[in-house]
Picture 1 (cartoon, rainbow, N blue to C red):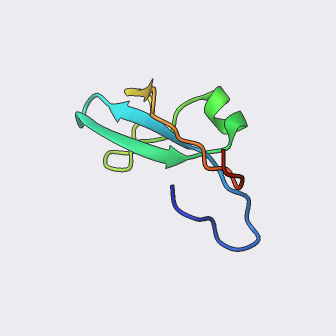
Picture 2 (picture 1 turned 30 degrees about the vertical axis):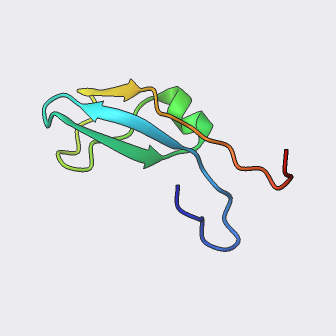
Length: 65
């Protein structure tokens, strides 16, 4: 995940798959926006044929274990 611009909160990236394009893609969205629906495909712009996918996540902490 890229570092957000200074002064902007970090947003999670979600994984999607566009069936017509047969391409996976990710989109940075707020949790509220993700709960309401899917992101449009960056290639074709469709939302109707996009499905949510499960993405791998990792957590970075400031303290050593």
